[in-house]
Length: 159
Ligand SMILES: Cc1cc2nc3c(=O)[nH]c(=O)nc-3n(C[C@H](O)[C@H](O)[C@H](O)COP(=O)(O)O)c2cc1C
Image (cartoon, helix red, strand yellow):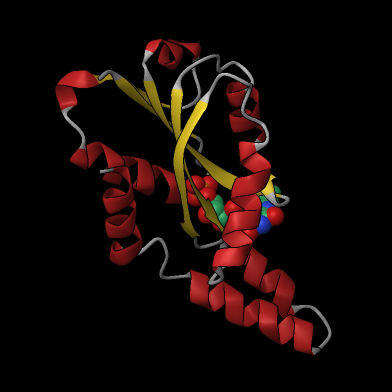
């Protein structure tokens, strides 16, 4: 079956997930690999990756999802906050709601993704509070993601 891997990535986290998917799928059936582009729409199955922006997918991905018609879709993505399945599920639900009728959702998989050091500096400048501590802890927990286990689980999910 023909497929395309479409991903939106500003700092490389989601791109790493896209590369991991590419590794386990047959190269001969790949019609497109790259950022959102109408060229990908011809594939029967699309693996679509996004980075989380304000609790949902980034704008480029949202615009691309609106162009889908009757393809099969597997969603993958990264989020700066995480560690909780419930949080990832909430994001996945919001993104799934953007899929046009006629699209078949095969599944979804999210993981945490590291954020730029400027974000930590912003937290550091905040007045001390339990919330600040929690944000700093989350930032540091995200630094190692996506890690090899995240990539392995994603590969298992698409297989
Ligand atoms: C403008 C902006 C908004 C973000 N909003 C969220 C958010 O609402 N929730 C979240 O978990 N992460 C948020 N993040 C973190 C990114 O989703 C996360 O670092 C992601 O892994 C980046 O993926 P990329 O490296 O593929 O660009 C935000 C990052 C930026 C730059």
